[in-house]
Image (cartoon, rainbow, N blue to C red; front, side):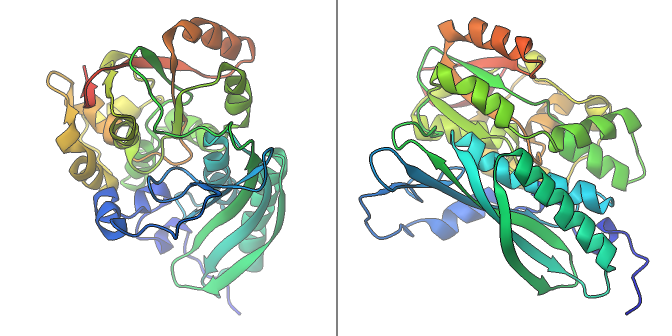
Length: 343
């Protein structure tokens, strides 16, 4: 069979977490759709979180998630590594440790075997780095390539991190800078920022394992990972489900190199509008610059952990992250009330 000449991204209508279904539409579709009552289902759809959690016994619970998307880069190995990282990080966002993974794959039959082998091989390496085993999977024929993982991990039944536990007085921290969607979309439009793209690739292939291991002794109140719904979409979910108000400092948002420049030039991904439709009615942003607001709505792929924990633990946590050469930025606080403010 003749190998195709097309690049991976040319075969995709959208890539990475920007391809996610609208969060607002998902809310509508899943409203009233709740799993059957099950005493051991600790986290399901009511409310939904980054992964489901099912208790096995007093000491063990399973964390289960899946995530896949079309290619956002042309390098097959980089695509496989990013897709694996994005799925594995959902387990870390729940405080869990990956155990097993299965590939979810859909590829045109015309893609050469070496391309597919590079995707699978890079994903396998990343699963091993995360502490798990890639044990199989399922592959379909499809004109648009797609790849990701279903991941099973473990966590103590009393030790998982929900996104619904933020408390007034908490500090809000973020473990990766923003701008992956903006930089990748700009590159597809011919506006490449090489330093920014290199930093984005490094960010999207950085597992949250180190951040989660460092965070675990500090017993955070709430954790989620920032992916396709953007910082403000995921902050809205945390605020709404915790019954609190998240106040974010626009000047403190960490950004990838070149991201602000691209946003100021008017670059916007397809996910920007969907994220504004979802979170916008709950966000106060008077005075925030348009380009900063765009980056706060920018869909991220394999983004960082958004953490809410007691403010008095913040300085020690920041020092511990710095000592381990891990990225961490304090970006706001939790207050009484509701909604999200970008100040």
